[in-house]
Structure formats: structure tokens, C-alpha cells
Image (tube, rainbow, N blue to C red; front, side):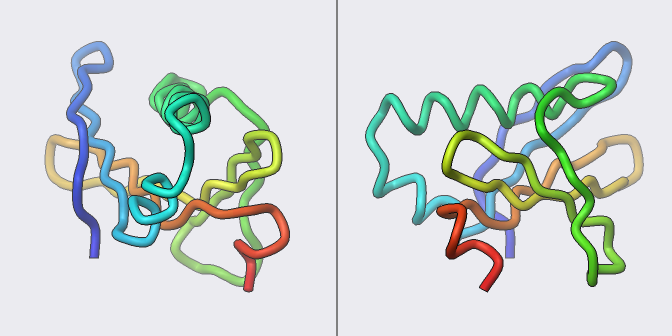
Length: 100
């Protein structure tokens, strides 16, 4: 289940960013400075091509990728929905715990 989000215009296309509950819970525990770093990194994913240390995750057929931001990992995927593309932030966590 995805909740929360922003809608951005990227040229003629619209892109919506949606955060899962797990991702929002993790962000609630961080300092404002750290949340700003993660939010800035997520916004860079809206660029064409996306900017950052991005790797496609193995073992998932739905196109999940991970973004490395310091010691944190952001698990996300792009979803095409009619005229709006959705950037779904599935989970955010510490480097050692996120893949469990």
C-alpha cells in the first residue's frame, strides 16, 4: 500500500512520487537534515535519466531498483498509470537491514 506523495511536472509528463508506509515510518525516525538528503535524492530520480547510484535488484520481476544514499538504501520502482508515471518508494532503510 502506498500513501503520501508529490506530483511533479517533467516536461510534458507528470510524475507522482508515492511513499509506502514503511518508508514514511523510517523517515519519521530521522533528523530533518537526513530527511532532506533522502528527499533530495528521491527528487533526482525524477530526472531523465535518473541520477544517483542506482542498481536493478535481482530476484524481483517488477523492476525494483535501489538507490544508495550514504548508509541508507531506497528501494523503488516506476509504475506507468495512464498519463501519469508513478515513482513508488517501496522502502527506505539502513544498508545492512533493508534487504532482509
